Image (cartoon, rainbow, N blue to C red; front, top):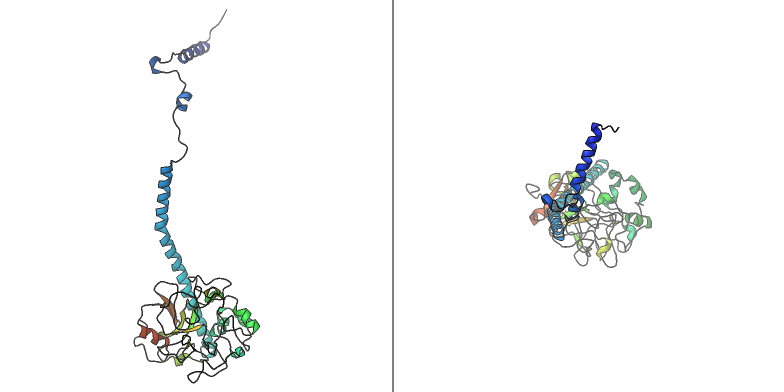
Length: 354
């Protein structure tokens, strides 16, 4: 006798219903008889962007980059400019610490020749480079936490004036080693391994120099704080320490890429006194800021560097004043005012820095 259980009956009924559903003829009740998988396989499936969509996305990204890039560049330059200003501040502090110790500021450069007469700069040390001594950039090294670098120099021996007029071998080798504390990050010519200097001592100011070389393009002034063989103290700054330039930015220091023969000036170069005379690492407020195009990495600046100051910053350059403060001075400053700020004892400008 066969016994049916409710579960087996339901199971058989369900199987029969499913069998009937599957066997429904094509077209009945609008059902084609195709399986769900077959229906799906007939629907086109996209797996990537079309070319037009890709081009639109690229265009949007390009527009965003074009909008953001100037802002990023400005932010980077602001950071570089801030670092450059801080470098100048530290140099001013080092000069004042030197003054506190020695009661005078260091000379811009030291030569074993008197700075008297009208042609002293062209008849001084001549080709006898043993008479050149350390510039101010070397004298302040102990006050910049660079005592090992200072001790590496032979202070009683000759210093190089440029790469083609070397001095003592040790001094020339040390001068050829770069010093980042004298480099502004905004200047593309400043880098490790390049003995560039973006901060020149102010040797004076005015329309007429105290002495000049044979061509007249390399000038010496003696009315500034950091002039040749000077021993100036704050007492000599009768115009007031807040009215006189002490150090200024330059972009005109000659680097190896400025000339085809690779001649360069070092951050530790001293003054040359002969027909080709020049007081390297100092300059005068003679010609307007940034008024000569180019820089020490793109052109020969041997006949330019001593006559003006400048920078890679837009609109002017920084100066450290004799009171230790640092100011950004516009390249559109009145030329007479600018020249007067370079001199320490001309009773001008009235009112000080604009």
